[in-house]
Structures are given as C-alpha cells and as structure tokens.
Length: 398
Image 1 (cartoon, rainbow, N blue to C red):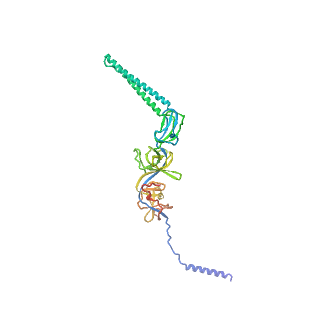
Image 2: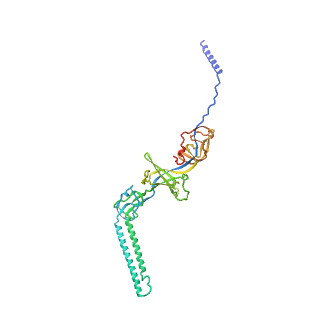
Image 3: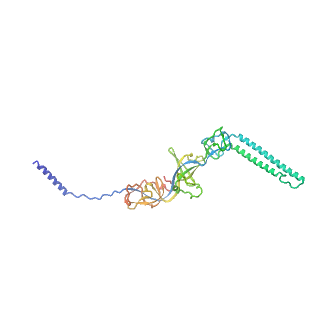
C-alpha cells in the first residue's frame, strides 16, 4: 500500500498537466513597435550674413626712433619728458648738450663772414677805381682783369661760403638742444647728465609716436578672400574693413576699434600667411571724449575683422556637419538624406552655407551613432537652437 500512493499522485499530476495543455488558449500575437532614433532639427532660413575673420597680434607703435645727437659734447641737462614712460609734444626739449664749443664756432664763422664781405667790398671799390683810371688815360674799353671782375667773383664766392659755414655753425648750436621729432612717448633713456656723447654715434634713447598704433594680423589667403580688400596690385587699402580688438584685464574685457589700412607686400616666408595692418587711432586715449583704455606697445590683442556680407546664406550650428562637405536633411517622410553643400565660412560654433540647402529645409543637428541613407527617424525640433536672427547682418559670429 505504501508504494501505491506515490503512483496514484503521479498519475493524477500527469492528468492535470494533460488537461492544462489540451485546454490552453493560444497566445495573443502583437506587432512589435519599431525603435526609431530621435533626431533634432532646425529650419533653414536664408539671411544676410556678415562674415567675420578672427586673428591676433601684438600692438606696435606707428613710428619708433633711436635718437642720436648731431653734435658731440657733454650732456648738461635731461628734462622730465625724456624719462622712461613720459609723454611729450612735437618740438619739446628732451636733452641739452654743452653749447660753449659750438658758440665759439658760431663766433668764428661770423668773423669769417665779415672778413669775406670786407674783401668783396674792397674788390668792388678797386674795380670802380680802375675803370675811372682807365677812362682818364683814354685807352679804350678796359678788360675784365682791369675791372677786377674775376677778383670780385672770387670774393662773392668767399662770402657765400662764409654764410654757409655760419648757417652750419648756427644749426649745430641749435642741435645742442635735442627736441622731440613728433608727439610721442619715451620708451628708454640711455644717457645722463655729465656723459660725453658723439655725433651720429651715441644713442641717446628710444621714443615712439602715439598718434596711432598698429597691429599685424596674420591671415591665410582663404581668410583674406572673405574680406572686402582691393584686388592684388592695387594701392594701399586705406580706410578698410573695421576691426574689433579686445584684451582681458582681470575680470574686465577692454575693447578698441580700428581699421585695416594696408597689407604687407609678401607672404611671411615661415608661415605662408598674409599680414594685414590694423590701425588704432589715439591708442593712449589722450583726445577729448576718449572712452577706451590706453594701449601699451607689445600688448597682445584678439581681433575680429569685418568681412563681406553674403545675401541669402544659411548660418547653421557646427553640429549640422556630417562631414567636411555634407549635412543631413529630413525629407517629408521623416527620413534622413545626405546633402552636399558649399560652405563659405566656418567658426568653432557654426558654419555659413551658400549652396545646397533650400529655404525651409529641416537640417539635422544632433549626432547619429549609426546612419543609413534614407533611414526613418523620429524628428524633434530643437528648441534651444542658436538665435539666427541675432546673427544676421551686423552681428559677428562668436
């Protein structure tokens, strides 16, 4: 009996399993929903886009001069305007050299001039007397030697030479007072009181002009093509494209405005770049009403150069690029297709497209891990797209 109960339990279990299998309902068949990748897009809208080109360079003075004396002598006085960092006006006295030896030279030149004039007067008088004597003798017309014409010409030449030597001596005397050649600032003074300086040899110091400053901005030829510059072979650019220059000072950002005034005559042989020269007027903010900060030579500046304006161009975020020449566009069935475009300008943030896109096209701006041409996607309009309206004409790309 003890072996019969396990057998009966097993038989009952098998019967119940058979009934469950026989009377079960078939599983409900459902179509699995396809998993589509989500793609963000923006609407392409044509705008007038003002291009900008970025560069950088250091401030340099328009003119910088090593001052040397035109006369030799001992330095008697150095004025405050010739101290390092001091400003001066054109013609201001900077340094004075002992004038005594030159005063002596002026006195000697004046004495020599007086002697020459006396000799000329004597020759003229002797010539007139000789003519009168010749007439009393009644021997015809006197010759040039009798009239002392060659002697008078020699005396006149001596007078002219003496006058020239006097002017030279007076100019040398004036040159003992070294004056500023232009409105400027002293970069470095190299001599002091009591030092003996040699004419055209000793460097007294270095000064530079402050009416405007210049910044050399290197650009590639492709970047230069984006600017409104004269054609090759034309004269200097003059008052060319606007340049916005900036530099950070602590937490503040100082800004200046300048213009491209010329381009250098040849490419830099080391970098193969073209250097444009930007001019900044009144770099030291000395004019009435100036609001910008003073500029110091050697300061490093970032530059944004205003370029040409493109009509009916499209500014897109850089994330829209599929590769260097294509973007991806959504068709009317929300399928992604590749579109080859013409890119006129790129920045770290966006690109400017001139051909290959139509107004209203939905351009994909999100990355896609796996892409197949004409693949279906779930399209979502990007809500935080860059404000294209703010980046139209007159607003540079950041």
